[in-house]
Image 1 (cartoon, rainbow, N blue to C red):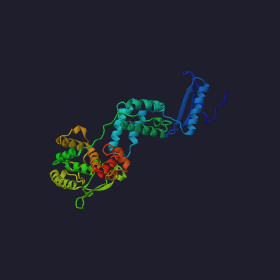
Image 2: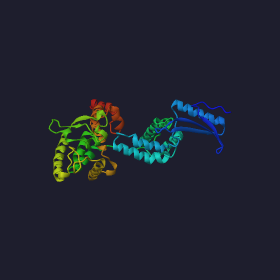
Image 3: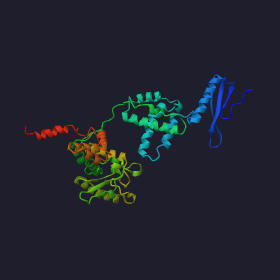
Image 4: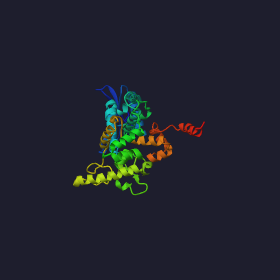
Length: 377
């Protein structure tokens, strides 16, 4: 008589129909109390027994994967649905678009347990032919987080995406800045438009577009000397600024104060015209009924101003007014430490990295100083 296997050692039996040895072991129970059975098979009893031992070892080590049919698409969709809680809506939309366009079509059908580092390397290398390095970094980040979430829920043993490096992609669209003459042309062209004060503050204070869209009149003081604005909020999730250092109070040039006074007068006229439709949110820059502007509203109005200024509207974005602010201050000789504080960066290294094309090379300063010192020679 065959000796009965000990409890917890699983079972082995011959399947006549499949002509294979079948190994099985109970690895847990569902919330409803139903047993979860993990099975494996082999052509020989020894092969099946070895697979059974591996299942038991993984179970004891807490590495057992029970969802063999779980795909990369399942993992990514689960992360998009539950892993982005509290994130800004724009961030959720961006991640959803990137995942739907680049990850799921290429890797989605692959079983997560079968996904290898080689699969991810090949996928990234293929995407590097058409996407920028920054986009590749974002794609890898989405996949890393999706697989990590699946790993924490026992869908896969390890995260192979962490083993993969980000290849160099195509050169992205370089940020640029307006020259002083171009900036003056844009300021002139914006006069009389609803976006005039917005453009003046962007170019003369370097405030982020998402910070201006959230600016309220309670954070503007035109009666102080000099007038100030408190950049304490943005349209990001939760209303916080991008970083803690981004929360700052800025003294305004006269041109900004004058533009805001004129803007407030125009807004009072708009309130009366809207009547009961006006929603009083205390916003400095609002729609015709007082609601918050979105990025599309700003971009569309900004392009109209650029066209009037004689510039190619398709070549510029509102955020490049901030780059222009940095460029003009740098050209005027302002130290990078001061520029970094004005734009709300954590430190100068962030300013140097993001705005490296807008900053004057520091090594020129010595030559310029010597030219001034020995100008009579």
